[in-house]
Amino acid sequence: MSKKNPKPNKLVKGFKETVLLLRTIPSVAVALFVVSVITMNLLANKTLVQTEYLAIDGGILVSWLSFMCMDIVTKHFGPKAATKLSVFAMLVNLLVCLIFYIVSIIPSKADDYSKFNEIFGGTWFILLSSSIAFLASAIINNVMNWVIGKAFKKNPDGKLAFVTRAYVSTFIGQFFDNLIFAMLTFMLFAPIFWDGFHWTFIQCVTCSLIGAALELILEIFFSPFGYWVCKNWKKQNIGHQYFDYVNGGNKDEDLNHGNI
Image 1: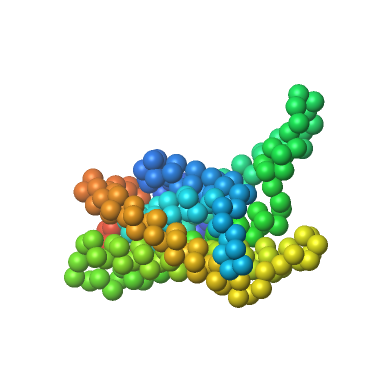
Image 2: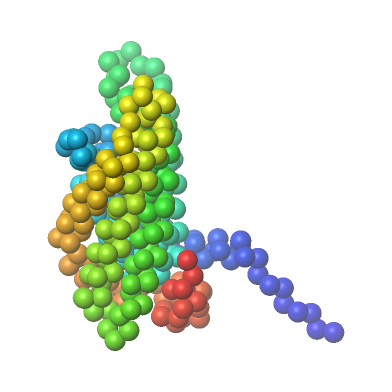
């Protein structure tokens, strides 16, 4: 009797697929995405504008880059790949925050580092809120970007298809990123740990909408570069090793692009 070939373990296959993906995505794109996530977390410590219905922190200056990178990866590799990259960036950010925290609690008599420790030490519930918000918004952005792209059957690689899927998914993704973070931080944790300070739901929604609009404007400004990157990746057949492993080399097959 002939022995049947054992089915590959899903966890092992998934791990190998993820490793291959991280090797296949151009290193510049991975580096920019990870750095933008880490930088966004640091810059969020400074509020640039604060009114009754609007609060903008420094993270807005780089958040567009995170979403543009996700849009580019989703367009070329699919939403599953973009979500895996988002999880990787979030884990790296958590590791960096842990290192920052360790450095902040190490005593030093060389100078007064109280402000340094306050900024880099961070606040645990802000980190938790931002991590949950980022991961949720990344999934929303990636899936919506892919779904909208499916509607452009005649010219899926055209500029109109790229900007439509990028702009719509970015605005909605950014809105939920801002909203989830604001609700967790200022409606759940702040009243407990910040002596009753809190935002109303209306304030959270208003700030999230205005913030998403401002972040979208920045991505619109840089979107021609994102479109050029997508065209260049396709021209150079970037990721063929990954597509070969996942679905037999067919980049456009639903096996890859349809799995979230």
